[in-house]
Length: 87
Image 1 (cartoon, helix red, strand yellow):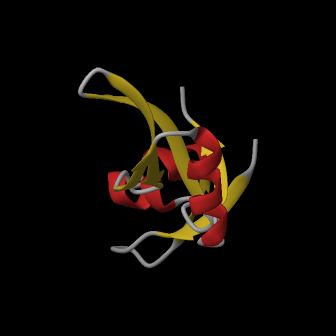
Image 2 (tube, one colour; image 1 turned 30 degrees about the vertical axis):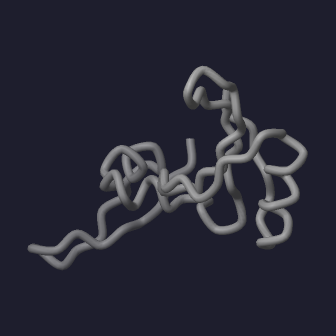
């Protein structure tokens, strides 16, 4: 188990806290930001009965919808991001 020292306010002393516990204490927005730099997610979505490929940023924002996965990958890479599949 990885253990890190982290400062706890109140008594000013350091307390050892496991990395797992630190992850559990992250806010949803802080957790979403982990690894957010540099990736975009490609996910199949149904729009008006047609299956398309949507591109999402790590924070969940949809930024594009295209007809083919290869086009979605081009969009992601043109924006200096790494494509990741979501099923």
